[in-house]
Length: 415
Ligand SMILES: NC(=O)c1ccc[n+]([C@@H]2O[C@H](COP(=O)([O-])OP(=O)(O)OC[C@H]3O[C@@H](n4cnc5c(N)ncnc54)[C@H](O)[C@@H]3O)[C@@H](O)[C@H]2O)c1
Image 1 (cartoon, rainbow, N blue to C red):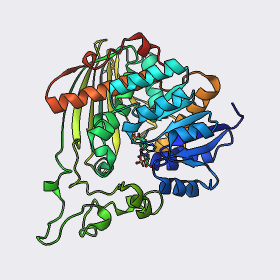
Image 2 (cartoon, rainbow, N blue to C red; image 1 turned 45 degrees about the vertical axis):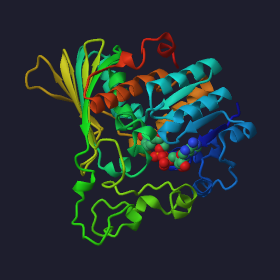
Image 3 (tube, rainbow, N blue to C red; image 1 turned 135 degrees about the vertical axis):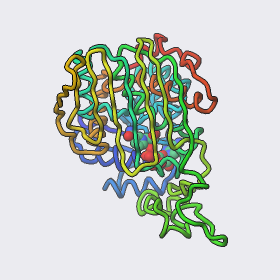
Image 4 (cartoon, helix red, strand yellow; image 1 turned 30 degrees about the vertical axis):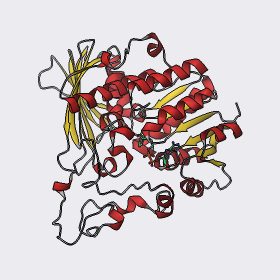
């Protein structure tokens, strides 16, 4: 291991370049040693963006591993590639940070866990919400017993950016595992993390597409003027309130990069072929008599995660839009509320959470001890998300044991 850790980035897209790449480029203790992406134009643009013009770039993972000595890799490909990339890195004894979700199915997560055990490498899942001071404080309050034994947790999420889920690869189950896996794993992980003594056992979900579909276009369509198929070529770009022309460039995703592989990020969110939801509700039951729900809605003019957590001695309410305050209502003080102050979020992406994830991964490499979120955490969150996908599509409650045995010893000790 070198003093300055050599990190490879697999998937030099938005997250790989603009988040991890830029954070690494600013650090003294680690740096980007190589990039790997299937799109060579995008990689060239990534090196320009990062000011790393001499950085080696590869379109083949095995070639990168053959030629470079790396202390770790960050996997920021589309979700369906996580499993194969992680297993190949681990087979080369390289530590991995896998951005969420760990894989798109529980089976895929299981395969990654098996590879980590076989090769004795460290792996971490990029559950950045765990780094938010707000969530850390909630966890501390729960652990300190201030609300007694947790009974019920509710999270309602609004996301003013629905187009990102309808305009590119994550709009389809085969590439993202569906939005309960792609997006929901963040939230299911937090529910699992807050309810640390419990294991999720049963899931019921309801979801659907209400607003982001062809019939709901927010303007009148003229008979001889077709819509879309992408914002950058749409005849209604000037009047559509959801026009996302700018997500196509300049930079990593400009037309030159599109020429290479046809990957667009500005498909019309109303017309795109998709098989996912724009709103839904999932209920999870745990084996320790705790119930939790997570609702997500991608049609709103604001973003927030609004939580209520009920214990047998009190209730906590908090939300990501007010990250410096948690409200506590002690059970036997009728009408009384107290505000618990939380340190302000640090600077950086996702409310300061992203630098925390990278820092913990570098610590994982240096100490050999898993930090922040393990493969066990990764599979538990995906299992809930996968069960939710099956539940809403097949209109039935899903037993997680039908997908994976979360009490399996190999999962229990997966670090
Ligand atoms: N933790 C978070 O808050 C958070 C936020 C956004 C995205 N993500 C996750 O980060 C990952 C990347 O998302 P994004 O928005 O940056 O996607 P993106 O589409 O912007 O970038 C993905 C990149 O991977 C490349 N790629 C595709 N197949 C590949 C392969 N087989 N090998 C190597 N590269 C390949 C693409 O060419 C593209 O450059 C996803 O897993 C996503 O779920 C996490």
